[in-house]
Image 1 (cartoon, rainbow, N blue to C red):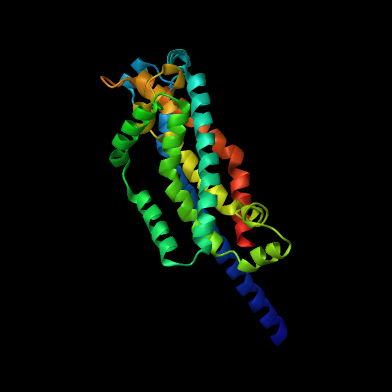
Image 2 (image 1 turned 90 degrees about the vertical axis):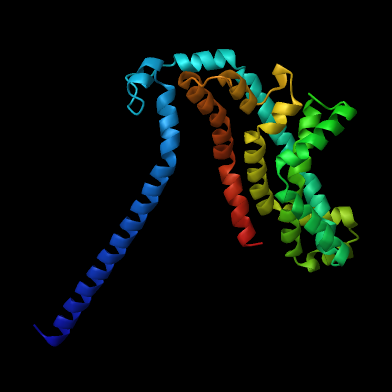
Length: 292
């Protein structure tokens, strides 16, 4: 074998080993990721598995698979907790809060991001402090104010309460994002005789899609899973959210697994469906932010 052929063979062997090592690292990395995902999904898998077991099966083998898919637990939960009505209530409240928070937050953040003075910075910092305020600190004054205004046990009251709580998050998100938008875009719009509202609506608002998608996801999860405010501000059973319907169905005196697990699954399904439906828009908004 000539010297050139030997060098060629050695180079091909090195390339093969490099390819094997890269594939091995890729397989190892994918294995770790899949393992971590599996560990995170274990509680969800266990919850679903337990929801299909009878009380006898749970007592005899708490960690085992169900002998058959017993749908009686779900039938009882659907019949007793007013599930469909509570889902409609939660979806209506969540969507309303997102619309109010997005619109009001963007409008409040726009002047704060453009007015570069000490007052605007102080306002932004005060709004940011609202993110660190625990819910139990605000629940009493909100309850008293809403009682005096006649907003207790109303959809308007719960939407306004959630909007007030999530508005600091929106202002914080939007202020940082708008500050990074080149001012030349607004100046070009004003040369076309656009007023402040037209500049905001036609220039700034379309560029807020990435941060709006992220903000909407955060607000959706927080509002849907919130327990304290719907429990204290809503008393009419026809206005209860999913979390409160689950709580009242399961009870607080004794926890029955045949009620707890199917109710938990039913309470989680709508949120998972909404996330799956809007997943592409959220990812598209995040991608659009990379090329803004």
